[in-house]
Image (tube, rainbow over all chains, first blue to last red; front, side, top):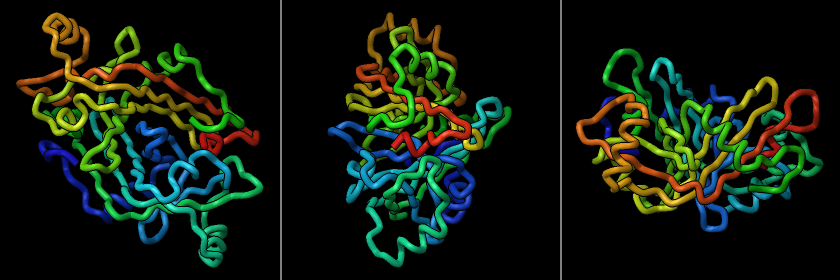
Length: 146
Length: 146
């Protein structure tokens, strides 16, 4: 991320702890050569990988399978000028291994809109970064994310 | 965005109306050839352009000036399985015109962390898309964003 002036860079374990609390995240990818971003449900695996459960024929699967994507979640309190943001960056791929699929089928919550044929997309936690800004009557603010 | 199955595509005016309510958004861009995403304060100009007010020497300015970026905001109610997401995609550039800068200096709220030397980054609303999903006990769900 960018220069550290007024906020706290988070270590990987803390990033994953925060990420696990987020109800949704956003998949940042490329579509038709343009930046694209989509909010999604997700599940965090024990190794920090982000797992999506989605229809096998969804456009998102076609767009991200095999690509490097960023997955972001945040919580911002505009009134208190406080918040955090975590980004997991890595290669996304459809899970092919049958044993892995069975494990995920058991552990990953059902999609809000289940499909007859679903796949799991796994985003490798190759890079995990995060920032927290301190709120209140200080000079710190969301601008310091920049 | 992706195939429309279970959610409502939003028209541009409604997208901008929703965007105007959001306390923060996220700039989706490329950094070191990887997808990058950062939550930011923003201001919505009358023509739908997204304006950021930031330190002149910030890393974000260096990364996005002259580049095509996506700017996303959303509101998701995980319990109700409802929400919306709006994306403004277009070229970002630092505002150079003195008259424009004076206007923005007057209209754009101060940064939460003001800097001695600030610039305005304007993201052109070349493409404005949005989706709303209907919550409750229906088959619709966030998964339909996909």
